[in-house]
Length: 159
Image (tube, rainbow, N blue to C red):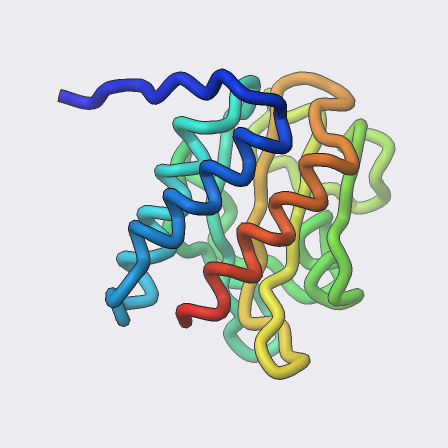
């Protein structure tokens, strides 16, 4: 039986706690898929008001669907296309308050209204992205960006 963990601190404290949980989950585990799957599940139960969270992994000049929580998703996204491909190409987090205002947005789930995509950088190369969608506009802010980038750094360090 799965029990929901209640986070009772400030947003920053809660993010610090979830990063510690990630460190504990991936400690000593070398399997990339297992670690990404647990990371997606951890964020799914931690974040509220989201409808998709997961990873796309770099394969050549495109991103290929990896472990995720949510509805079935687009399988391949070329670098430079959509929010994920743009974040990968630019090697910078894409924080999109309204996906309908983003040129070339790829709608895998019509319910998605806002999105944050954090590139996973190893030795200067994009090895994948963390993608999180919300059914609400303006769901993500600079605090989310700061801590999700830290979350990804911890994850990438284990890969």
